[in-house]
Image (cartoon, rainbow, N blue to C red; front, side):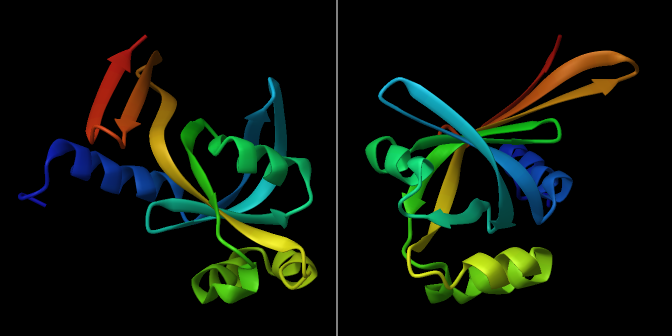
Length: 151
């Protein structure tokens, strides 16, 4: 890890802290309407993946505005979403879903109108405490910078 810069070191730590999957709240927005809903989400190679029906409001909002946010535990993730086609067309996703959310994979993935969402993070932040003092950590994926701020 000697050759890694601070952002790379901290990002490696970030992925370990987050783990490989969680139920996360997905927020989307279009026409000044923000909506949120929980989603079974897997994290693969630094991106967040979930599935939904192409006819649902969240997909319609993402088609108009690809900016999305996810939150879980004490993490907030801002990113850009891409609709990738059918979940069953992507083995990496199906394997992860079957491992972590088998009932969701079985129930939803093969529905003809189901689609795969890929969210590429632009900014991740984390609230935490050290010695009872609050701080936030920020991973800016656009500028490839990391910072920690005491509150």
